[in-house]
Image (tube, rainbow, N blue to C red; front, side):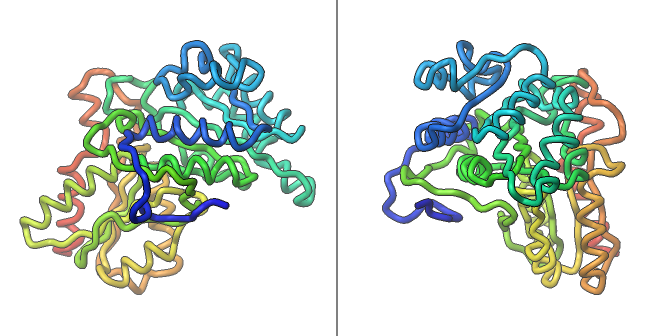
Length: 341
């Protein structure tokens, strides 16, 4: 039986892990405990994946369970869908999350709909995971955050962790959920030593649909997820020096969305800044603000602000990349705007 936990238990035997290692550990443990689980993806076997997340999996569990697939995301998702219909739990890796678009039809028109069109009789335990996000000079084909595409498709859950502890616990929860999950791994966080943390050796999950308060505050609420969590924490430090107390909410999962955590924070601060790395138009930041206006408009003392990527592809040149992506400075400016409204 899994422990459902927010933090490692006192006295637990622990090992320090970065986020990439935490995901790897989750995959090994789930493969061990679930003999019906398989992994599919490009170069995930012999090479261990483009970012080494699946290193050692094929050597331990064999090529029948950890399958090197052709360079075809449509084939990967189609095979995952068929395997799930035949009782398998599937981890399907996108070498970069940008290329998930090549499997779009299979995801939104088939994988996402089977549970509904069978009247709840068929579950589709498929986790599609892969490296996402910018700031690494990956340019337009290797820097996307496209989570809003799938948030618009009923039947799909969306996860975006920011810490090693959450990355492991959310991966385990996703693989056990029974529904298709798209799991975004910000590649800038994979090997970031400063966020490495102790993980309990006992089994645990982090439940889907529950946000985390990364920092408490009283003057403004930051709502974010993934890599921008750390930008918001840096912004909160700067604001503290200016006499402004910022609360940072890490959504962790977008679908389902923890509306209660957002509204509870706003009841204290009455001011909102939402940050996402994806483009502004139809991005998830806009959805958060819309939900707040639907259910907590009377809590707002100032118009909510969005800090997002500009509506442009991500450039390769570093100065241009940083220009179009969200920054700490933009978050600070947005916070001061709502506080001083």
